[in-house]
Amino acid sequence: MRVAEYERSASSGISRSENASPAAREALILHLSGKGKQIYTCQSAGGVYAWKLKAPDAKLFRQNGELAGRHFAGPTWEASDGSRITGKLVASSPSPDSNSIPWLLLSVTSHDGAGIMSRVQNVQRLETKGGMPPGTGCSAPNENHETPISYEATYYFYGMPSLR
Image (cartoon, rainbow, N blue to C red; front, top):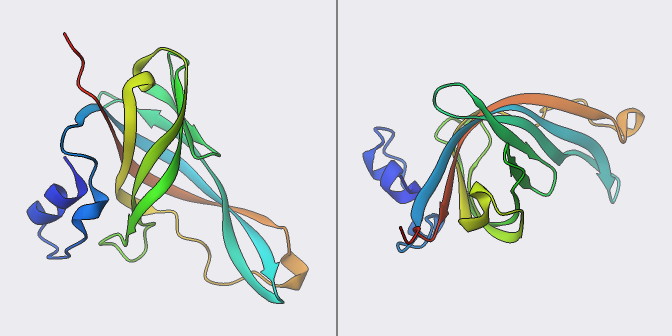
């Protein structure tokens, strides 16, 4: 399901840009649940302190609960078969849950390996729970301090349909 389709079917009434969807010619290749941490670092920019995302650190699971891979800095997703992708942000929409990290569309910038991830061109992060940076606690005494925040999300991996 693409972001725009999900939003039209959601009862929240929140609308988001059609630009947050992968290309219509792409097919859903893989659907995984992620559970882990968003790691934030307290940083100063011009004397103003704020929590900045350092990296995700999550495990990826199939719908039956089987471990399918991991998600980490890059942002990178690595499948259990060793194939991996790295992406860059294309679009971001606030989560319907104001206490949760945004929904994202990312475009794949690199591929490694010949497994399931080799055909992926876009990744969506939807249905997020948690993961927001702390609202307080980032100040000079805490500069460079890291804080892991629990989160969950659903990842949809899109690419060109197979020629079978």
